[in-house]
Image 1 (cartoon, helix red, strand yellow):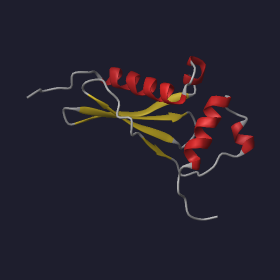
Image 2 (cartoon, one colour; image 1 turned 135 degrees about the horizontal axis):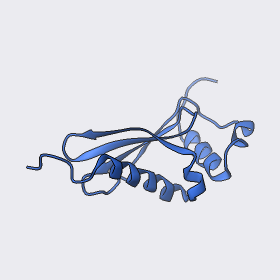
Image 3 (cartoon, helix red, strand yellow; image 1 turned 45 degrees about the vertical axis):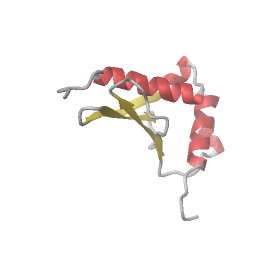
Image 4 (cartoon, one colour; image 1 turned 60 degrees about the vertical axis):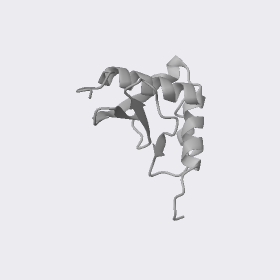
Length: 111
């Protein structure tokens, strides 16, 4: 049995960021808007990396296995179900599209 993960926390973080960037076809300049919120190991076989957009409550939760592979079934979490057009103007188009699309998939009750 392995006594530690085969990839480092920094490597897991880098792989999760790359995964989100590839998933949304983001550019390197778009990456500047993303930040790692949390990065923790789960047991001896994988990490959970939480990625967000600076200043927003949204986050993408990506599992990175000790093989370096990212689970394609990431989780998106946000208390906000839409992106106001005035808010969208504050972000690069790809980041605004990513937020709008992900928030639209949430099933939020209320008005």
